[in-house]
Length: 270
Image (cartoon, rainbow, N blue to C red):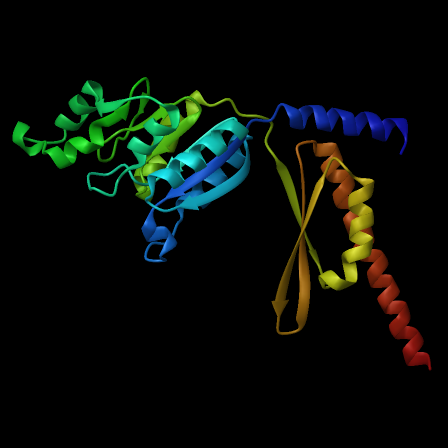
């Protein structure tokens, strides 16, 4: 490797070290049973990509306090931000808020700020039932996350952001918390369609990857009636490094195409 390549790799590594990271925790028996399709994790992943925050891990856990506590503590110790969805509604199995309080070792009770917000959603004071007041129970020391749709707030404590499981409400909460996050350089990507299956490109693609250590090259097989082909996705935060790697991938495909054509021509001649 040349000194220029060494310097470029060092610059990319330095940039990567400063990129914020995130973990996502989806909570709910209904997700694990298949009764409800989880779309929230995909929404959060795309949102984080736009913000330049690297999503490193996703977990799905049941409505079990010990499982939630273990997952929250593991994720918050590893990543810059943690985002949870689900389990902050009015029913007995909505135990996320209590679990978060336990994970942080703090108390939890009806928060006067959250109660006042909820009260604006009901015409009569008596409509704010004990069940609905469960949605106002917030761990001590937490900040509220605005919910413009159903009013029941989410909350943030430490680096953990606790949001509703209903997709539209969660999406509104994401908009609310976005200004509070420190993003990084946006990940750039280029998708290249390769006419060869993964088995054909495995070795030459590995060589391209080795020659471009500051770039990530993903290989995704596809199948159509005419056979297998591969989508190659090149990713980097450095536009010049991305372009160089993408050009190398295209050159690899051209070399393989020429080799195939030459082999076919030789077979025809015989």
